[in-house]
Image (cartoon, rainbow, N blue to C red; front, side, top):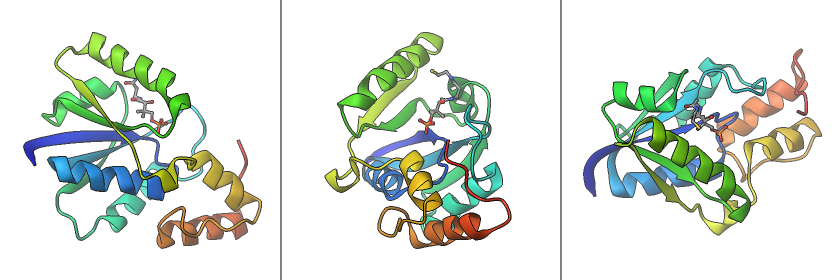
Length: 168
Ligand code: PNS
């Protein structure tokens, strides 16, 4: 294990078992993983920043090596405030590559000291995305096994609640 912290940024709207898998893998390599939840993703998030942060915190409540913070602005600036030079991103499939490649090189051009580490989740989650999870939940399908149970419950209550899930 490297005596080093790493930042794992994303929208986490909501966190899926694929994200959990990447965080677990990150913990095998780094001694601290800071999950950085983007405050205002371009797409209108289903869950508020507070809800997205809380869901990650609850899942990793017994793991002090996982910290959860909300951020806005440039990722490289936030990484600097956290004293970390490593960014973790998950790569599910070749289709992720182009966007991730552009983002990693843009971050490097903004801050040459930052390195992006790509990790592959378990093959069981290679098809999984927060977008699909929201869509399936909105249409009444089961997302059990795709997200942690507490997230599944929260999704169900959003579907039933006064503010119904919108498919974007
Ligand atoms: O889960 P996502 O939506 O794929 O995560 C995207 C995220 C949050 C990593 C990316 O949008 C981001 O870093 N946003 C912060 C703004 C920024 O630094 N943009 C320039 C990097 S290309």
